[in-house]
Length: 175
Image 1: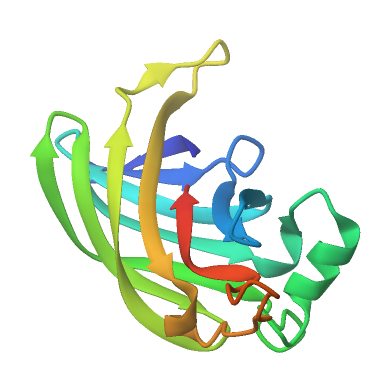
Image 2 (image 1 turned 135 degrees about the vertical axis):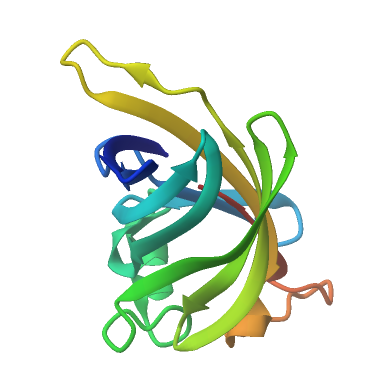
């Protein structure tokens, strides 16, 4: 995630730069390989106070999902998974930010997807701000989490001939 800043009363509000940001995910498929994908449209803000992360929120366009397989993407947009017609966005809002070390944080927050909201924990690393060639103040952040898709009601699956499941429950996320 890349961000551009706007300073207000000693706090820096960072706007997520949608041209340099996306959310990646990976999930085990057929028990033998990992499918990777992304949501390519994300907007939001973060705040820092005295150079330290204090808040973050993001809205992700669920229909921007891409696994580079058109049929799979259409299935993921369907009522079997994200039901993007009914719930077009995923939303994250931080509830607590704890500094773990220089530019390293644990960010607790609420993730809403498919109409359900549950808490998640992100392990977040930030970069020091820089001025870009056009004079804008920019910084970056990367967050990692693991979630259970079933917790949000994303339970579609198929039993394989071997007895395993087509899609694992655990999803790894990088934002």
